[in-house]
Length: 420
Image (cartoon, rainbow, N blue to C red; front, side, top):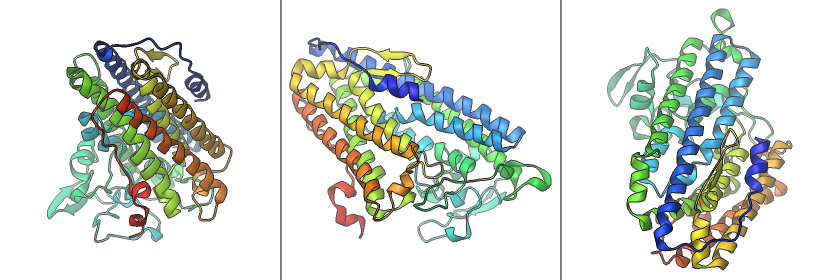
């Protein structure tokens, strides 16, 4: 991971070569190549996670649980860099909730602490605990969950009763099964699920260890299947690539929409400033594992990848080609220089957040009410992302594109609404 950080943050550019409108397809081809590479890396790392999960289930121990957790954290590195392909590409938006939906009512999946509570008016299945219940009633229908399969998770449990918080699939369901709840509040520390939750016989803790193992395997298999499908959409002849290349101007708009929406409303707003406003560790993106600092960092890097036309793979290979940066430089060199500087500044701020968390000042602690140092670290990164978005808006003007509507967030646009 450190090697990737050094490689990704030491990129250099030569003099921009003027590009004409006919070069837009080359820019889009680079974008599609990066998408395919990042989703393929996500698939590969999920397959590595599957191997670690199988080792945990076959021989539960502190060591095999730690190895599975390490594999999960590694799997987040390439996936988070794909989030810049959201918002502008409908095929990604329609699919993304299967693999990265959050926050989730974890009581749907497994046992939770007694302080968690039970069903609510908003979610009758907030404490269903399918691991402990092989049958249950959903929307008046009796459900046979004797066998926990990918189909049960995807077709029945995920967003059960049309409640978005009923997240039954994807990275965060797996994260919960590996770490358990983080009950530390804004104190240092992640979830601490014991490896004996996957033990057999009398050593089993938490009950239903065989069903918990079946859920973990099913969720991991489903993640692999979903990532395999998305990687194929960006390959030659894939729907995502073909749709993008069919209209070069619309394709450039898709690139900028993804960059601006992730930078502003999603990351700066919903994932960062909202948590600071509420002082709520439940607003962390990777709340069970305390890996949020990495998710923020690699989200930011994904935006930079798109603009610079360069991606460093998990094996060190570099995917590069004609960049959006060079297209903008041909239209307005000053705007290009401004955005490149803004992207570098954002990565510097996110890098400081990452370094602080890895140095022992966890994201949970930064969110504590009255923790001025923590708030300053997060809000410096938020401001960098907001400023970066303003530069992306200037790119839209420089390329003479119609105004693009980026995703917003009440935390940024209407803070009073957050507390209503």
